[in-house]
Image (cartoon, rainbow, N blue to C red; front, side, top):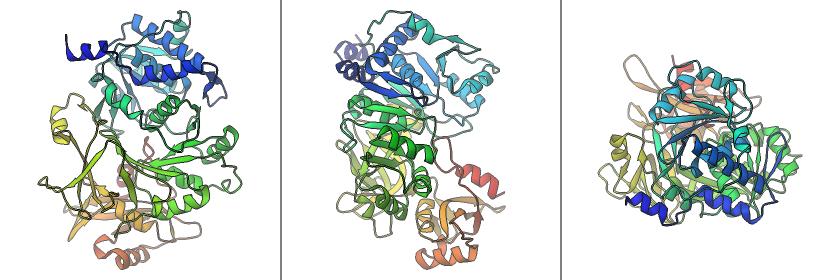
Length: 514
């Protein structure tokens, strides 16, 4: 008997089964409110999952198969993910912003046997149908191009399924960034994900009521799982619009939400913020990209002691947390801490030779925990490079202080090599955001004809301001030194974001540094 079959028969319960058990304990309570206002009870959600899992299993979905989701922020998307996992399959999410040819290449690379589409992604699905070798497609609801698998599942009796996977089986393959080409596929196992759900969100409300206003294919999906596991409920919106978010928090008495820093800034700048009733909020979690200390202090003043910063990577899941008050904890260079290691997580900062560095010295952040990835899908070379002796080499430059607080300086690969040294974009962005004329910014490098790198700053000016390159250079030189002074300043109306909600520096580079 294989180790995996032995684990399965040993009574392992996946994250989806654990959540469904929680839902069965209080079947009448509301667990999902859709963007259209439809209210779904725990029993309804649980039964939909079991019916769809049975239907998928009958159609060949099972252990070792891959089901891909082309879905938005819908209840059907959550049901489909749970059902595919309960049936034994791994899941792959196709992110908004990927081109159809990239989606098709990803599906081919992960041996996808079935594509499920909800009503938010019909247009993209029809584009995919024009491409060769796209896997069989089923729709999660009525459509003009594929069979409605939910209608077929609704005719089935409710027969609970489970026990089909072991802790070493993949529950998903997450793809890192990239709107062109095939991004890396990160294998996450059922065992590591199931353990991570036991890291309960502190201060999220009792029970938590979570607002999912960013993509369920990203971190919002994980917050959804944790919320349901903690006996809470989820309110879905189709996307982030600051006015709508403020209205929804007030109307639905939201206790918890997740925002990337650029979205948090949009909320702070919205004219409706002062008049909004946000008294129900208990926890606003931010992360995913570097945050401005000045803006977080502004957020703390506006929202109260509800800010929790998370630092993590898909390869290692959550690594550190910074709670309320930690927005005041900064390092000697002014960097904002990303907090201290979560329970069960070990952090070391090491140099290129693998030597562990003392407090205060910069090096690569390396992480060991029960939650790290299994590896990169079909890329043993990359896996061996990033995952060594159980430690994930994050590629982030940072340091620990004597109290165990971690500070992230930048990504090793985003470092700009200029004459005289290295410029870390996140460090310069943090400084620029303290300039009164700068509302938002993104820093990137660009090579000239002689392959020398130059520092570019894209800046959204503050209201009524028009900072000049000379003014910005003087400001940076005084505080950071001439090495960090940008060679070019681009005043832009907005900073474009990737599908994951992070500044799209590739797009800025292509538009502004040609």
